[in-house]
Image (cartoon, rainbow over all chains, first blue to last red; front, side):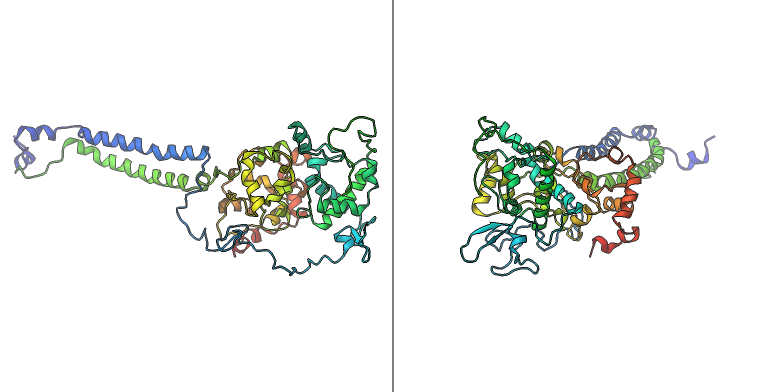
Length: 252
Length: 224
């Protein structure tokens, strides 16, 4: 006896329709689409994995700009209005920032100039603003190891890594760093060493822009301490050997 | 009769399939968005091409130059300045002075125009990061910039995201060093002081008067 279902809703008669109704699997294109989508989901994951392990020449992608880039000029940025292209401007000529007046030649120059003859006389003592104590020496050592060690070496005998590298490369223009432990340097006035740091000597460049006056005096104090504690170096010329490169003797 | 629609047999799978696909999409999308948008993925590894192939691996690594030899302002100002061309000339007036790679440096020095270095570590403009505040409180260069002494070309080493900043602002003791070791690239707490990193960091945080966590995580500390 046919059921109510079969009576009321008999299966459609055309043979093809009956066949399709009995299909247990979705059509092939639906299955392959599913496979493609599942495989496709791995692509972003692979890209992310790659991005995490490699470097990129392009800056980060900003999905949300927020206010990350503002219409202002940051430190050391470029400015199209000025000839030199700098956004940061120096002080106007003939002006001076508060506290930047260098009125004390002993402290700022390391020498005094005779008003009449113009003769230069290096100071032989520390300026009154500077007190030589452990703190100053420690500061001097730190500054010395930042700026001086590269050429003069940690012990001051002129064997810093940059100097050694230049000799290794046989650079024709390189003048070997001066040995600071010789009697000649020990005899130099404090002010002369201070002035050498500020303005440079022969091939040594000026460090005035990198080291401020306080630190220059700290370095002088530390160098004196270093000289006190190390043996006097004898230069190659005094030993009767030929010097490595150009002569060490010269006046600043 | 024949205009009636009949579901084929396989339609029985549609409901469970739809369930699985919904769950899949709901886990997949957050996963991909989180990973893909995260600063760890996008920001780390930024290595722009610089006008001069300056190698920190040679200068800071092989020649053991201190960071502050060139970046002189780092202890006193918010910005760790890119050195003026004159600093390059300190040595390169005599060493490799004819090198074609240094041509932009020579042009810059002759004409008085800056070398167009490309900024690598760029924070959003509403963040007021201060280098001197960090350096003077014992946060090492390495903490944010990585092992620069091993980088032939500088690349971004850390995500520099706000979450990453806060990680340290919430627990600074995990990242502090003695002030005189901030530029060192191979400092180790245990080897040099015999104390664990956190133990030493807690002492240093007190000694350097590191602000309270409340202050360190306040909006106005970094944004104004």
